[in-house]
Every structure is written in C-alpha cells, then in structure tokens.
Image 1 (cartoon, rainbow, N blue to C red):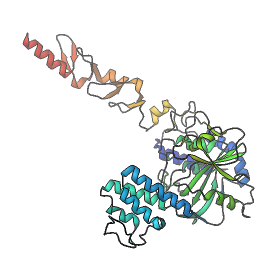
Image 2 (image 1 turned 90 degrees about the vertical axis):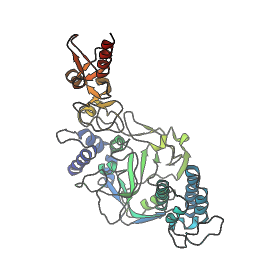
Image 3 (image 1 turned 90 degrees about the horizontal axis):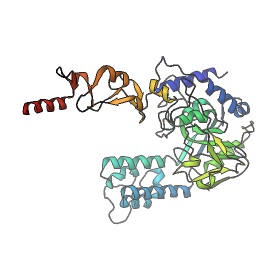
Amino acid sequence: MYNEIWENVESVIRYSQEYCDDMSIDLTELRTEWEQNKKKWLDMWGGPMLEAPQPMTFGLSQENKDKEVLEFCEWLERRYHAYDLSDFVWTIRHSFFQNKIPFICEWDGYPKGIKEGMKITKAFRYFIEDKDKLEEIRTEASRIIQKDKISGTLVFSVHPLDYLSISETTYNWRSCHAMDGDYRLGNLNYMTDACTVVCYIRDSSGSKYKLPNFPESVPWNSKKWRVLFYMGNGATIASRQYPFTAQDILPIIDHELSQPWNTTGFTLGAAPWATDIINDMQNQTKNAPHTGQFNDALISSLYLNVWHKGWADKPIVVGEPIHCLHCGKEYPAGADTFLCFSCECDYGIQVREDIFVCDCCGYRKPISEVYQTQDGNYVCEQCMEQETVFCANCGELVFYDLAKYRLSCDSYFCRDCWDWIDDSEEDE
C-alpha cells in the first residue's frame, strides 16, 4: 500500500535536489514516521486526501477589498514615493479588483492618456517611468487582484506530494518552502509530524500539472491557494495563507465541512475562529528540534494576527526531525538541504558559506579543509600537496605552473617575489 506514492516522492526529491543516479537515498524513516503520525487522518479519510465533491468559490468582502487597496497605496508611497499613483488607485478603489478604469477622474495632474475602460495596471505607466519599478508594481497589483475570487475544489491532505508541493504551483507564486527554497527541509518535517494538515484550492477539472521543481513523470495538483493547519492539544492554528490572506475563507471552510458529503467526522474544531497577536501565541506552538520549517505562527514579520480555534493546553509541536536521506546517521546540515554536512559535501549542490569547491579537482570540501592560493583560488588538501608549493620568500601558496624554481637555493618563488629577488640581485 502506498508504494507508488513513495516511488513518486523519491522521483521528486532526486529531480529537485539534482541528486546523481549513483547516490542512494533511503526514505524508510520518512515513510514509517508518515504512516504512524498521519494515521488518524489516513484512517478517518480512508486515504491521504479528503476532497469536497463540488467546486467552491470565495472572495474578499468589500471591507477587506478596501483594506487591501489601502495597504497597496501605503506600499506605493513607502517603497516608491509614488504619491500621485497612490491617489489615483485610491480614487478608483471600487474598480481595482475588476482592473478597469470606470470613469475619467477629475483631479489636478491626471494624465490625459488614461481612458475609460483601460486596464488599471496598464495606466500605471503614466505615473512610473522606470521599467523595473513599473514591473514590480504591476506584479504586486496583479497578486492582489487575484484575491478577488478563487474557484476550485477544496482539498485537505496529508499526501506526501502535497507537502513537497506546498510552494510548487503554476499560479505565479512561491515561498521559502519551494523545493529549491531556504526552508525546504521543513516540507519533510511537516510531512512526518503528527499535527500538520495541508488545505488548498485546486483546479476543479481534476487536471494535474508539471510543477516547477517536479519531474514531468510526476504531475500533481497546482495550488491556487493554501494554508497549513497545526492541529492538536485541543486547538487548531492556521499558518499564514498563500498567496494571499482571505479572512472570510476560514468560516467558509468550516461550513463546507459541515455539509452532508463529509461523512468522515473530520472538523477543524468546534470553537469559533479568533485572532490573537503573534506575541500572545508563543506558548501555543513550538518547533521540534532539528527541524527546518518556517513556522509563521512563531516568527513571521507579516503574519502578525494569528488565526486559531481554541487554546492548546500545551504547545503543539510542529515538525518531526528526520535524518540525512543518504547516510541516515546525522541530521541535515541546514533548512536548505536533506543531507548531513558530510553527505552535503560529497553529493550536495547547495552554495554554502561553510563548503567550498576545490578549484583544482572540483570536489566540495568543508572550509576547514581548503586552502587559498595567492591568486584567490581554493584547493583541497590533496590538490594542495600535488599541485601547489609555498613561495620560499612570502609563504603564499602558488600553483607549480605559476611558480619559478631557483636552482641555487633549491626553492620555488611566486612571480612577484621572483621579480623582486632578480631586481635586488641586479642592484647588488
């Protein structure tokens, strides 16, 4: 049972981390912890996923739309000092989410090129001349406009591929939990813990897609929107929503779960949804040691009002530690790798401050085991002994083919010292 799932998991990990074919990886620990810690949902749902039978649509209330536009205007002023553009956007805020100019505004300085019916984002060019800034502003506006309405199938999942793809999507958004992100280890920690459930909206057609860091052979659901729920100890805590926060959606999800189609008994809890500032939530959840997830309910600078149901009688422990996928002996070397430090040196591809690539042989070595040559290259100990020599005058490490040998003193010199010695001898 589930063998095909784990074959796909291995394919995704190998592809996304660019592991060579002759490097073995062992997913036994992952599978064992997953089957044990997700058992309550696997049994309740009869499998790793629970899907609503009918598509649902949700969007922002007008109050929340106005709030989003106001925050966008404040962002324009704070980041770009684009006060005229900010005034323009706020003036037509009730049409912002339709992305269409509703009328010709009457105010001083209004650009004459803007016409009724024009796309609002297209009109930005009359306020912003810098192409890079204009593209950034349009991208941010488009991201906000996407919040207006989202339709699709509601999914609750403990499927391993959904943890690997929590930030892999075809809908032009990503986060630090992408499979090439700084917190990718957290995907495996979420996958194997006893509290984290993935909730998302997918295309209601049922189509599966080639995701950015997934191989062609493993198409999967593309998430239009998602949130992680940390469940346990009498409470449910919602992590930050991506790619946007829709405050209205959580009660809608509760309502959907209360419909006759859900015969599993699964709910997010009986308590109503409430928000508390992140500082007051510090005793409600904690990260397990040796894990790499970015727990928004603990450390986010953007998710300051945390949504939750009830209060946990003790902290919900988020993430389950896993060992190196190759040797299985040590914990991974950081949140951006699935390998321990030794295996990361031997097989990894990550650029790290504590690992250097020998410029001579190309092997990765710990910084403590490499040496810098006079010309700024780094070499491992073996290449240092075979390919370099210390200058007898300045002591710098020099490649043999760049050094000069003086028979009279049986010594090698770098070119700078060689020239200096020659000049000194001529002066004498």
